[in-house]
Length: 322
Image (tube, rainbow, N blue to C red; front, top):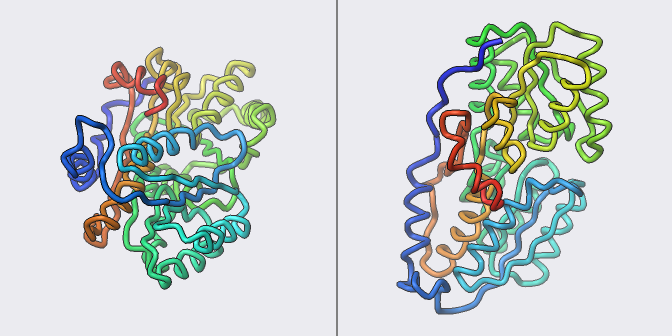
């Protein structure tokens, strides 16, 4: 089976680069590594599920920005939408200076975010909710265009002569994941959605393996997270399937698998950047009244990582920044 061809150009917004430059120069304290001035406490609230190492990169970026800008970062998470909304209210009650949150479940968490905005507390959304954040008066967003990313993957599967694709969703109802697979299906209609329980990787491996045994026509497996890609690798090995694996997101093992040709490519949304920019944008708003993006989302992806550009990225993945 042929490898999928040329990498997609990174579709990150120029404003993200400009903001990163501002981060390094603002306040003239680059050499010291910490900005002088007033200290702030910022809350970061996500839908992180237990054991999902993807969020380590989000936190690493957020903590780097917090250290750089003399911020106390209060991180909390809950994969349950109702509990996450409660965490948002708790942050408001604790008088934080700003809030960064994910909108994976906008119907449940969005109203809580809107109350933050109405209370005059600076708020940004990141990672999930690109199509919903403005509905809840959230002025800034940092993340990937998931529909475009998924459609691009689907189109490349078609260009590669794919027969049938599986798109694996590890959290049913999570808007970013559902949107990714909807995009894959848009780009390659012969795609079947397979739901798994992402917090139980042995079960994920077994479910994918069973599907491959039942349906040998599967030529491509699209996973939506690095640990799921590793489970899919094991499933194809166990069943003897020749299905090619494509994934979203990176970790050190997936980076090496791309380098070795065992995974075709990764669609990287650059979570470290999301965490860093979310915290820095709040700091810029608090200290300088900035609103980043001009009412449009600041894109951190999709950024395609394959054998043509994986070389220098491996070490960054090992450092937990890619």
